[in-house]
Length: 219
Image (cartoon, rainbow, N blue to C red; front, side, top):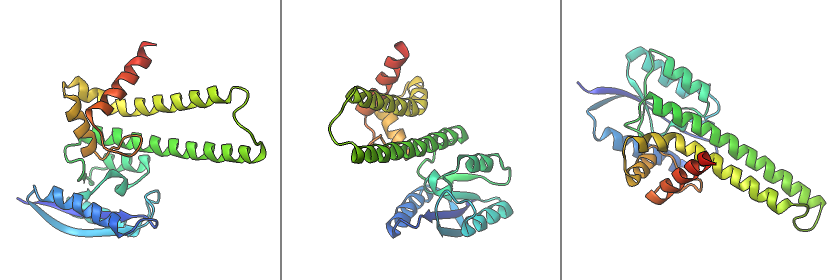
């Protein structure tokens, strides 16, 4: 019997149609390997921080009514709110599937949601810090003074440690399963998780995270 799906896509007001096309590529790739029936396709042009999206609510209503699975390309298309995702995962009448993370169970999705929210918080803090630093430089000209270089280096080190800890929550369990570093890198890419610089993972990048976390634990 064909699996029933309700497709949901979302682009923010800042995104172009390319964002929608990329989502549909992920979804079509997933559906290509499954016997399926599409009951509906809903799409919003609205921020993921706003859960009161009209088309999203229509998609959820159809899912609850039919028992179909809600299909999205990536988790952030569903919502950027961790609490909202957690509530959906608890709801008995709603199930969803992430096309770019086809093998992810509820635990993996939960971990990724936590990491994504932490990433947004860190970006926000870095932006605020950068603006504050720029404002200070506008008032006081000159180079680094009074140990500023040491403070800047310490800040960068702390940020790198926080990033490594974040990625380690997914990488270390996969390593404990005996997976090679290359396979772990492929899993991270499949889950839609990028490196700190927004690139793809490779065995070297995975190894650096493991060494950094293990080195910190040994200190």
